[in-house]
Length: 430
Ligand code: URA
Image (cartoon, rainbow, N blue to C red; front, top):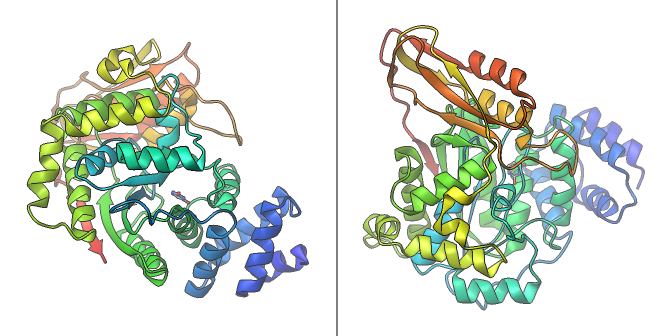
């Protein structure tokens, strides 16, 4: 394999063959192709894109770069994935709901990526919780608890683990073929029969417009169907952050409230919508909405979450008493410069503020501060008076605070009129 030639061909806009892609991905995973060449190739893909055939071939090379998990011994396997957003703690709520509904979730999740958070980073806010399980423990837990969740260190799509971390620090994340192949390689390797994709659209998402979101959703649904899986995608709004809290520990706090039926309306509703989608796709459409909703009020989803945390070494007292979670002690607020109605809170600004505070990574493998974050004291559409606090920042010893406040102040706007309410669900594919 001549890597400079391959990079040059992509730079010139040529399409790769499946053989080329297998060689590149295989070489990278074996350590024969260095990060700097792959980084240059990623940037060429970013600018030149890929054909649907190339995206499908890349996905298969990535999926087959490690073990292909066989979940056929488990009943009604279902997986869920978000393309990434700010304050998007949906997996923490939805996966135990699905387990409580009798489906089996054996899932691989990611860490934060660019300005978006990751489920594994969030769960690591719970002391003791461990994202690594042996294959046997993973299957056993999925069978017994209905929910097992591992990070990318398992030998599942290791090519994605490597590429994901490299893209995170080389400004090559928001690129359709790279996102589609990243997500679908993990989903195919993880082995679930039913896959529900939450494709985020808006300022805080990688896809900024509904048409880009639809294109990504179609690409992923197509890849999944080709591989014989049941795939559905829902396009959902990510203009403003989801819920009221962004930042790792803070999002666990909000997820736990939602599992108690006390979550913010948008998050609560999204979890129910996605649960209905999963039940329907898996062949259990009867009364799906009422059944999904009930799991958040009868304690069944919460008790699955508790059992899941405990099974993976986490201390369940943090589930019973979220006040124990480490939240950074520093506080600062952004206040309204004028009265009126909150017209926007830009999710990208909030995501970048969390990064600035230390809640995400700027270098591969960097340690993060789970306790920092941002709270939306007001949501778009609500009335505000001049001087009213709009956002609260949770910081540690002012690290990144000045920059975070600047980002947040630029990201909020107040207008004289009630803004048009943005629908949560923007479309469905599949
Ligand atoms: N989520 C992923 O798993 N991969 C991406 O590239 C983007 C979001």
